[in-house]
Image (tube, rainbow, N blue to C red):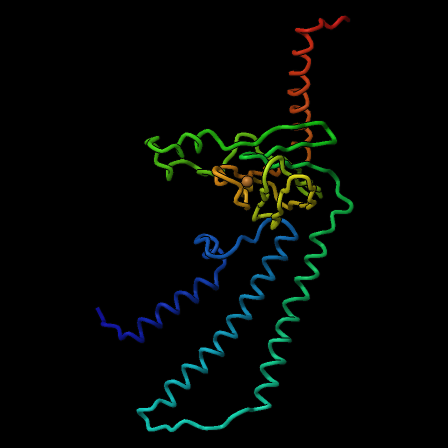
Length: 285
Ligand SMILES: [Cu+2]
């Protein structure tokens, strides 16, 4: 094998890193970068993140390049003597104007996205989310559907100390629930967020939304998923002992499937109520 010099090895590492960053799928597989998500808002957030990243790359390259060049080129062993100038109006103007321009370039899309993110007008449906220690309640005021969403049994059993279960063998460990939130695809859903006890936060990275659930307050956010699928998130506000055990799971389904799910849920809830009344007062027909 050919022995590589340190410089050649460093170059090889840099080259492979460069190849990796060129392929976003490789990055996604390695989960180094943030997810691009499945909503228009999440696409915008991702694009802003990449814009900031590329600007930082250019700045870092320029700064560290100039530093490395100065260190190597003007080193003492070459007999270079330090210059003694002080103050440079030209340099000061450049390092004031340049960051200002960069900030404007970053702030404009950020402000635009924030405004869209807060605009829940023309929502097609509403869901109320209530945080509890340590679970979520989802209510659909339009149809009267209401249920709790708690950590899935597989994770619950595995997380107990001495359970003997290898958590790495548990699929979606601590990221799975018994009853996921179900929403239709391509539908603007308004989410009302509150809490029953302490402050929680409802967060789904693929939707690029996260907001605090505060007792006594109702916070509003909205989402509109462009793809069907299962999307996972977590409580993002330290809310007590089992903060890590109240994940968020959202199932985005086709509109027709959502109608079926709604009907089935209503029947399930109505059926329960009917059974209870049956016992107390027999229904006359
Ligand atoms: Cu919480």
